[in-house]
Image (cartoon, rainbow, N blue to C red):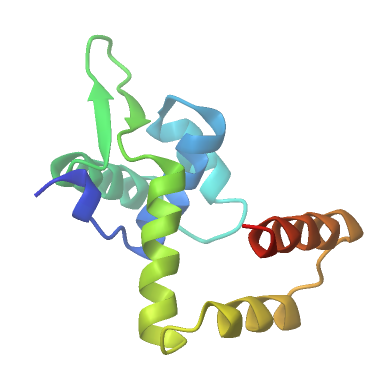
Length: 126
């Protein structure tokens, strides 16, 4: 199975997000960030990251006593795959419905709205 076809679980995505944001990290560093927002034990984080390594989502440097993990999957590509799947499965193939739902449920900043308008203008001019 290539990393292109992997569908990370919600918990795995949380870990990937940390690795994408922080770069290479130990289990302890990832766990300290996770426990700020969810009640999860260190061994659960360790086990998840071991499973992610087996699945090919992360790589592990074992050259020192403390193992360091890094994401093997590309953030943008993973996001594109998940959004495409969501559009197909949840919004009946309609990207517009996804965008309207997202904007209706989440207060976008003025900068975000300006970026969306600019992007839509660029799409209209193609």
